[in-house]
Image (cartoon, rainbow over all chains, first blue to last red; front, top):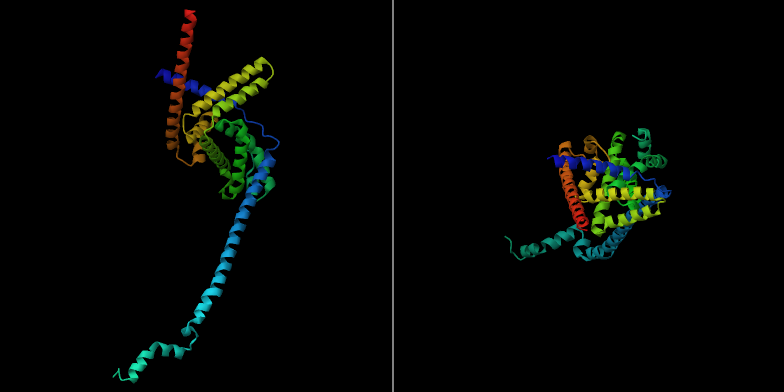
Length: 107
Length: 203
């Protein structure tokens, strides 16, 4: 037990000596300029990430516009039901009922 | 506190000259802590710059200027921890590098007395760093802050945002491991001295 205590004291002394053997170093003359360069580099990197995402969003919007304008709208317009008036649409929908009625299928 | 609260407030609101003054006030102290924590003099400035870079981009998250110092220490702890983890991944022989560098420094020193003193310091640094290397990176930093930097448990509680008892347990376990390694080293030295003694006797 005493030995452990003794070693504990020695370890404390070693840590104290270690503190003295490693004094606070003087920063070099380049410390501040390098730090500001790194801050600027990070700022530019952040901005370029935002710019990149903005470009991706613009490209995606353009692609979607082309898809809607070039493919989806013409396909929608080609559908006869889409160009028909309300009455014509109703007629298309119920044309078979009407024929059945005329031929006496419905009493 | 090494700076006025008002200066921190100005830096928080984006005043770069205020931030510059804060860095100038704290850099030496922070570099000292990093130096004793990571044990590689050539990388101290790099890690120090990383600390202040993180400070610059996280200053707006600081709730009040009163907690500035624990906040700065937390950033220091995190940067030192990241560095030590990277070093472990690189599998570099930290101690041998340091030893060579310190020996070169010692060789460059003029006068044998000065060289002896530098060699003694080198031995202390090597021994302390090899003992601290016996525990995990997290515990190494914690132990350095407590035992070498002399921070109190209250201060560590603020830095780590962990309650005092949990810190005491971690510190106790880490210290026990270091103590065990220290004891083993002393035993080996005693045995080798005794061995050398017997050789001398036989001659």
